[in-house]
Image (cartoon, rainbow, N blue to C red; front, side):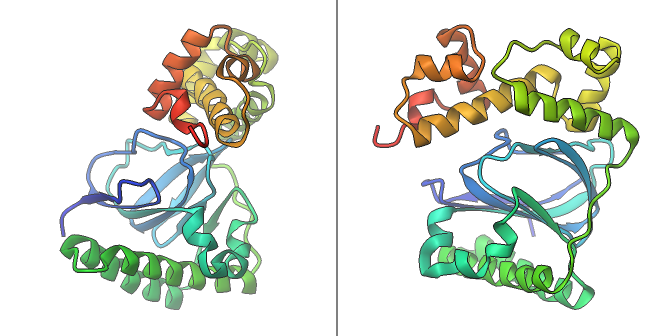
Length: 276
């Protein structure tokens, strides 16, 4: 079965399947949708919000809307994965959210299912891959119902077991997590690599090198992504003017804000204004 990328054009459901010998992550690192990442084979390191986490074969990663994330371990690329992105409006239909609430209480969750559940999920994934490849009538709705079945299995597992606390892969990753948490709390202020290196008692070279290794982002990419993610939320949820939003999230110039916004999201800021 070949790789594929399906998007319904409305941004409300997309499915991406990849059996990769090379690294690839979609350009956008946060979405207005829920993301369900199913690792069918291989091993990946994920950086989600402010932590690097190891994802093993059979794990499912569930990420809430507007949470910054990307896979980081480009040196061990061989893997097979399926990603489904679903907009909240699909989840709200038929009170699915009420039933699946345990999966969405947190900003993200890694679900490690027992073997029996993994076999059931594997069957669902293979059916979904076939549906998306053959595109028979009603395939999009079929994919949605398969996703809900998969989430239901995860939800039952999460409810019946305590979710383990996931350790950072190394002390270096834990240190970089502290830096990332600081950026998430202080993105409105003027921040630079040198300021943070001084604050965390490391050399700018060390911080620059290991920040990229642990997160997959350069320092500037990450800072810009955090700022733009917050700006996107303000555009979607408030009527604040664009120049005020730019200032609120830490940009000195609205022109620079517009350029960075488009490079991070692929769209100009007003694309996300409700009722535009």
